[in-house]
Image (cartoon, rainbow, N blue to C red):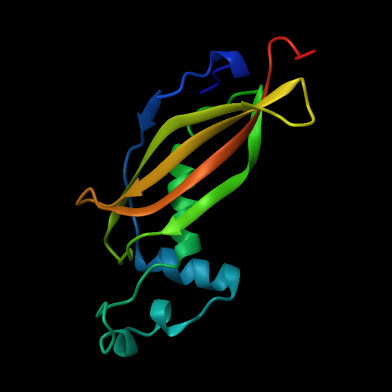
Length: 150
C-alpha cells in the first residue's frame, strides 16, 4: 500500500499495530545460515536445556528483522529509513512464539544539514503472544518536507 506523507503530515502520538508472525525452527536455522551465527544458544537444544532459558532462543537480529518487517506494510515515496537507535533485546524469543509490532510516532525534528527534509522517529515495540515486550527500538525516517526551511 502506498501512502504519501510529507514531514509536516506526521503527528506525534499516531500509531499502528501489525498482524502476527510465529517464529519457527526453520526461521532460526535459516538465520544462522545467512549470518554465520551458530552459537549454541540458537542451535543446540541439549545444551540449552542446561541453561537458564531451558530451550533454544531466536537470534536477536532475527527478532529485529521480523519485527521491523511486520511494520513494513506502507510505502511512503517521500520517506526512507535513516537508521535505528536505542535497540534493545528485552526478553528472549522461543520457537513457537508469535510476534507483533506496535509503532508510535514519538518525535519530529529538523535535519541538521538538509532543509528539504526532517527526521521522524517511530518507536517500535515488538511484543510476543503474552503482550510482553521482547524488543524495542527507535526507527528514524528521513522525510521530505512540503516546503524547505530557509
